[in-house]
Image (cartoon, rainbow over all chains, first blue to last red; front, side, top):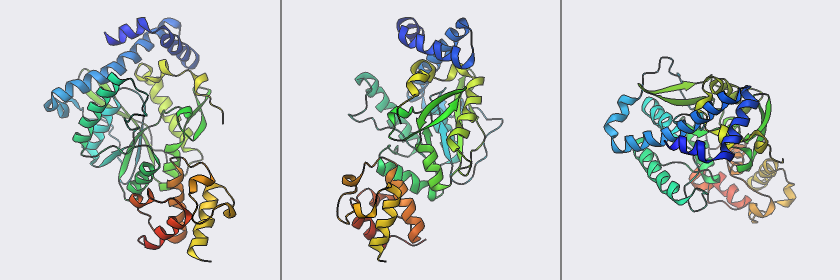
Length: 260
Length: 78
């Protein structure tokens, strides 16, 4: 219902999402409209799922499906995720499987641009995730990134969004995505190089019979461009499930181009 | 070369400024724009140069090259 009302009511977002889908995936307009609605539904579904599991924590563990091709990782890993499917539940499932994983996320402080009602809900959700994972989120400031580096060097892992537009980061890099040049925040790549930790692309999708983790191949920090290689892995996942990527409606590829 | 001088050289290299611009006691933020990744990059370069492991909890407190040099001195060797 939320997705449908946004689909109908937010014409600018719908236009941007459909444009991105037709340009990048060569979809027909009708298919792009359905995919855009699916992306809105995916985003709304994560909020609904989190609200449900906050109210019914006993249901959470049984909701995680046994992955048939579970990523096998040992040692420190930078788990990079997308605004796709259920990022929060991907994080919790990984914590369940692998133990200590530190989330790098933007703090929900006064500087956060989220509107107040959404911010209140986000704070509640973060408190829930921190309680379940047993770890406070690392922020995104200098001290937090230094702490993330230290944790990786100590053999632990971190989890962080990858599809952060370059214009909201202090350092960005251009990569190709669906034959288009986009700028993304470069923090994941720099952290990988500083710590020699591999990047594992990972997302979770919600299905009627539970949540499933999807992952790409590990990207080693020594490759020519870890950012580009990670984007290639994610592009493959996005092509298979375009209706799960929330960024279609939010980002036009033109907007991702920022002055260097 | 003193450890303060070596620290200054390393930090200058990471921040891509001339070592002469880095007065030992001047705040690093007055010399150049620092972003959220700069501190981690400085820490990494100092770790490699001195064979130490700078603790992140104390890294957040450093303001100058001298602070960094002192932190290197008291950091555990690898």
